[in-house]
Image (cartoon, rainbow, N blue to C red; front, side, top):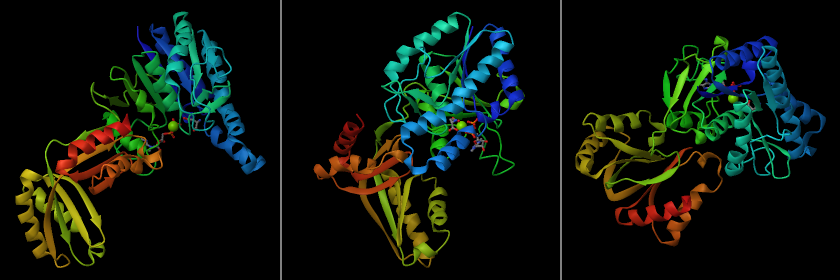
Length: 406
Ligand code: ADP
Ligand code: ASP
Ligand code: MG
């Protein structure tokens, strides 16, 4: 017997016949002897409609608490519909919303972007286990939480993916199934590029990065709760079959972290190329990386300014890279010269929170300033910040940044 968590997105419960089909797919798995928990989003675009209505009716005067209470109506409705549809197929079901005594998802008091209180949630999940053991199919509102005063909170737009993985984690489920309106994770958004290709599988890290950079198909925080032992997949509702293949999300492999700091073991050399008007000349990046690629020299990072660009390479490759790039500079008219800089230590700070935490760069760099450690270069993206400091300062800087994370 497996314990499955199936999350149905808005489109997959978009009308009466879809709800019926979804309920049937759940009942089919139940009849095979599995336990199953259903997590549901609001029907179709009803969350958008509720937001539109509140904006039109009240506008800026609406408090966050009022807004959370109003948008919650989407999920409050869909769980009732879904649970009734299951019961109509002859199987016992109970809908669980934040007013129910067994409601499991506990959060802080932030109404619209609530943070999950994991410990309390884990304890409350015992009630859901009891229901499962009685042969009942619980249908739980996605996206919603319950704050410290018993008030309704929400986990942010798209948050029912987070609900599904959180519930899967706390129940030690065998599989979390995300049912949506595309066949799975594709090479890009299939609604933007028609011949996007379906991926059979994707790693947790890649999926997280894709989501953080804006692919809507899964909420970027959902995978925080992806246990290495839980299977996870994204499938299309159109099949009406929870055993459909879709895209499997694999890992994280034990020991792999989604958040952390690492210090690269070898010194990294910085080679800077300068030239007037580089910003207006196309193909310079390709030229620089191409001439290093020919000799199989790996580039750890590239940074660019108006009139310069720097490449970071392993110290053991630096002499060869220096000569190759010299040739490139001589042959390229906008480039004038280059220099082989100092040996640096590369420290990478990675976290899915970077994109939404104002001041995160200063949190990391402030302790270095206090210890008078100079930052030679810094490269940042939405999921990682890479710092280069003098090689001799590497260990110290690494320890200081680790303290920030702790
Ligand atoms: P749900 O309501 O089921 O949660 P969403 O609309 O939140 O569904 O997410 C599914 C949508 O994600 C797809 O309809 C698609 O337009 C979009 N999407 C963006 N990038 C990708 C991608 N790489 N692969 C698949 N879908 C993607
Ligand atoms: N219904 C909510 C929204 O539209 C949550 C979700 O769909 O995941 O944002
Ligand atoms: Mg979604």
